[in-house]
Length: 196
Image 1 (cartoon, rainbow, N blue to C red):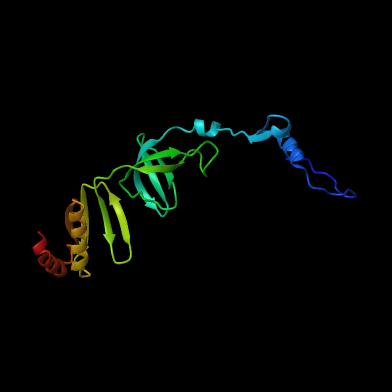
Image 2: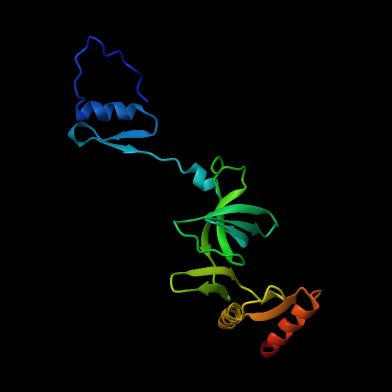
């Protein structure tokens, strides 16, 4: 900014408004307008980096980790994208509009971006309790509910998953695992009779 000055042995004084304006006008990006008592100074901004950034692109959220998502673009490339704002609304399966980071911004070399908007969903698969709602995935055709023969599965959790799928108009498919455990598998199969 200003060159350093040796102030030793000199009396310091505050700059007048005219001196401040005159010194700012010497700096790059500041312009002095008008004259006399009607002088003004304005800051000029360069929007070149914004002009270089492409418009919104469409993508599919294929993974979600805390506050960032992995978005797959139409060409198959995957990028880490951060939500605009404090709370991420995107979940796996969401179609989003995103914008790549401007050149020189972000941690990687063009492998990051910002989620600008989540597009309309066909459905949303989520869990809700008294305290909060946890969204898992969107735009699903089918949900696989995998339960084990042993240890004994929780029928209340199975019912909650079925209700959530029904509420979102998602076709549920129940799969019973551990068929090699003959007796526990037979007991679990019998408990699943009402859901067939």
